Length: 141
Ligand code: DQA
Image (cartoon, rainbow, N blue to C red; front, side, top):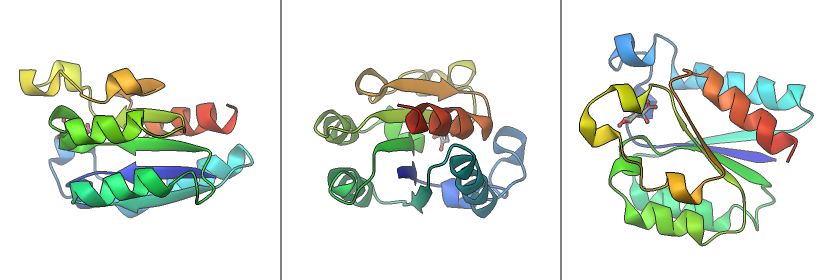
């Protein structure tokens, strides 16, 4: 079972800067993740929060809740949160970082992610397909 965590402002997908993030909603993304996990004989549970502490709590409890891996789009917290990095470093599950847009082709403040160094992999710029690649990897891990 794979946990998909979407961070702040991703609840606005479809309405938010569609030229960057596309026209599909968070619900669309969550449905796709569910279908992709099924393709790999696994199950995806999606959660979204605009609250840093809530995301930390989900990371802490994921293993005891039976998850075997985590896909996280940290959104802006990736660029700002040492607490998020410490939470990922402190758990025993593989975590893959996904960004919909290519953060390296955007503003300089997006080039650095605090969590990349403690994640199994980072995927940026593939749109929603980045989640598919991450799910495939974790399902076969
Ligand atoms: C994002 C990229 C971040 O820089 C931004 O703050 C987001 C979304 C992405 O998916 O491309 O909110 O993580």
